[in-house]
Amino acid sequence: MLIRVLLAAVLAGVAAGVFATAAQSVRVTPLILQAETYENGGGHDHHAGGHDHGTTAGTEVAETDEGGAWAPADGWERTFFTLMANIVVGAGFALVITAVILVTGRTVTLTSGLAWGLAGFIVFVLAPGLGLPPELPGTAAADLTARQTWWLATVLATGAGLGILAFRRQALWIVAALALIAAPHLYGAPQPAEHEALVPANLAVEFAIASIATGFVYWLFLGGLLGFVLDRVMRSEAAHLEAAA
Amino acid sequence: MSGHHALMSITEVALLAEQKIAVIQLDGTKRITTAVFAAVLGVFFIYTAAFSQSMTLHNAAHDTRHAIATPCH
Image 1 (tube, rainbow over the protein chains, first blue to last red):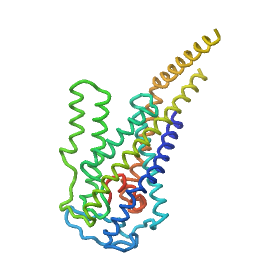
Image 2 (cartoon, rainbow over the protein chains, first blue to last red):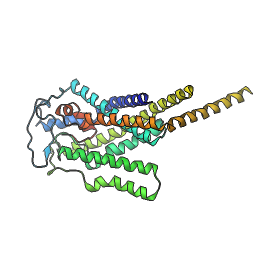
Image 3 (spheres, each protein chain N blue to C red):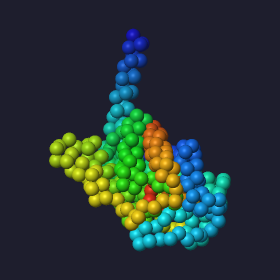
Image 4 (cartoon, rainbow over the protein chains, first blue to last red):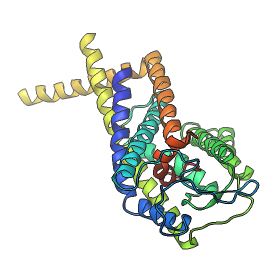
């Protein structure tokens, strides 16, 4: 069971990663590339090397390559590494969702997989996006570790809250779930000392919407596909057990 | 008569299938072990691609991080 379930999840995640790369190429990636022309003062090769942006206390103006570390060259190399990263993230999301499905002990199908995908979208895109909206390169943001911590806490709280709402009916549980979901937003996401952006506001809005819409389609794809493959693996496992019995 | 038989066997198959699924669901230890493996592996993958502050990993996964709105830079 272990290996086959893990393989099925990874397979769904890899397919979702390929799908994500194609879906992002419609609006999301072109907007990132466009934003970089502002970030680099226009016209510079994005990966030409390190460049210094002024940093004020608590505020970092985002930049792509820092410290002169290796970065993929623009063009196919960059697209290839984005594809690889999308595949790794896709496999990661699929495995985490699979773990939660297994803990609930529920069977899953393509249809219920879509519901899991919707939950994934709410937990991993919508809830953290409320406090930390999708940002283009060249946008001021608060300290990275603080934002990562808030993102993780929001994902965990929203996931736990949704889980309780889905599987518990008592009033006390529901109140606790709503409190969990609201808590990160009442606490507030880390914000930069000053909101400054090198990219025009309309570009930022376009990007946020494109990113969230792409995330929605992506999570439905991932959830549906994961439900489908897990359903098949579980059935064949059951048949195997039956034959052995 | 033979049609009736066929129908019975389909019902039986369906019942058997349900029992098999129940067997899987009851197999708690295996299920939870698999869940733990999946969770650890999944978190490791997400961390590597979307959260590691290594500059090389960051630059390789840059567009992915922006696209899925995980904190970047």
